[in-house]
Each structure stands twice: as C-alpha cells, then as structure tokens.
Image 1 (tube, helix red, strand yellow):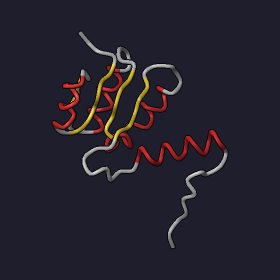
Image 2 (cartoon, one colour):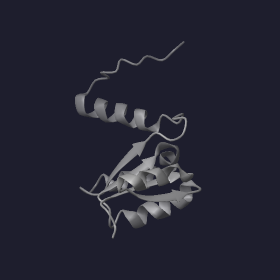
Image 3 (spheres, one colour):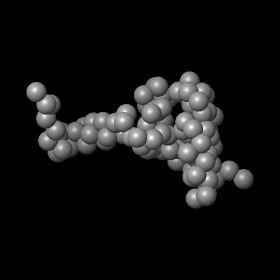
Length: 108
C-alpha cells in the first residue's frame, strides 16, 4: 500500500527513508525525476525531492503550488552544495514579508 509521503533522489541514500515509512524512488537524472514526480503527484500528499534535482524540476514544482496537494519539499542532498532549498525559502519569506529578514549581503 502506498503511503502519503514519497522521496525522489539520486543514489541509494533515499532508500534509508523507507525505514521511516517513506516510499523511496531513486532516479539517475532530473529528466527521470520529472517523470516520476508527475506520476507521484497524483497519489502522494507530501513529496520530498533532493535539492540537487530541483533545479531541473522548476516548472513541475511550480505547477504543484497551484493545488493544495502534493506539497513538494526540497531537502539537502549529499554535500548540500546546490543551495536550492535555502534560495527558495529566502524568496518565499521576501514575498510574504516584503523584506529580506536574513539580511544577506553580496560579498565584494
């Protein structure tokens, strides 16, 4: 039986989430992840996606924002180098509050 939460990510690390009752879907590329995300969006309420894939899934993820479910949550992958999740959180806070509360400045 399918649960209400799934994870899509590269490598076998996503399989560790199965111990917590999360259905895991390992993929090899953003293109494959896009296809899997479209299928899962029909049946899952929460879909975790490793942030190394999220850049290639922008259009699909933005379409999910138009409906209550599924909720797509970017999570750090591996070394956490892509910064996709942090960037999106900052954009959402600025849009909601109208100000940059993180006070991030560009380095010179």
